[in-house]
Length: 83
Image (cartoon, rainbow, N blue to C red):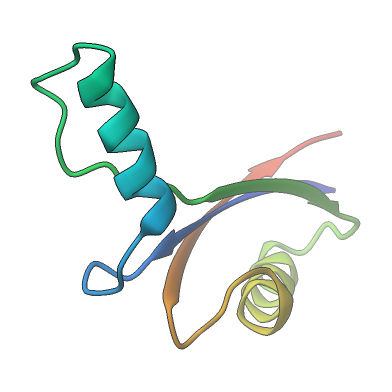
């Protein structure tokens, strides 16, 4: 079994309203050195296989088809073998 960790982020040229709102809030709270805030998604799940290549393929397809919007977002993932 593998544990997958997927991080989905908006592409750098796509407006990030959540990131902008958080950054404005930071400024109001006095965090004047904060800039470039981008907010994404962190997703964890298990893949029930012992074949690493098969797990990678499944995580990639799942991420492309459901977890991310391929027009606006990029994703990266990490696999960790678990017992």
